Length: 257
Image 1: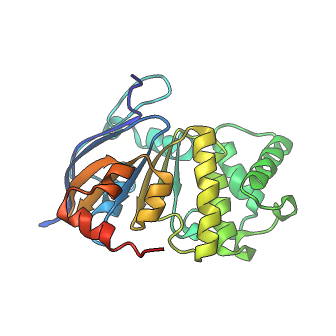
Image 2 (image 1 turned 90 degrees about the vertical axis):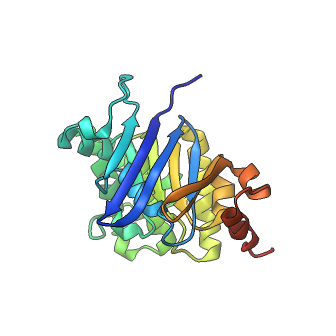
């Protein structure tokens, strides 16, 4: 069996006496999408920020499978090594695209910056690759020199996706990636994400309160309540046959179509 790309053991985050998340353990496998779901305050975003290095954990292990096969705890990496991972091997898709883009820099430059982080220096090659990725996320080539501030919300989110994926990362974190979009735009972005995740065989950890998004994108689901994992399993099993009372309430709250 393939080794996990990410392994979490006994993860805990405390803010004084308040527990953000505690006793969290799970693995993520190459090419797998894991959805972390729960209501506001459940601990899912705290967990995501700890795993992705945006928040310092209080206890536990976070191990990542490097390209050379090493499996270090992220705490053992230098600050420079962690920053390099975040710019190259990892991606982070924010709910608000403005948090993941440079709004006053052109669309092409937003994508090209990630290429430069992995050593690309030839302007023509960078621009060509950026243009290819804009097309891949359904942004017209003639918009390459436009700034994201001139884009719609859906276009900004698609540009953020291109910026993250251009370096062929192996692990992507997503925080409510369609949460701020209109329903029709959500569907388009979700279809795009599902196709790219499958084509590129990405490992993904996605936080969402929307169980329909989790069903569409993920193979496995983790349900959180009060900072704890209360249920985990294959997404279809958890949604179709929830075992925990809290999960049953979440599932029952889904509007009927």
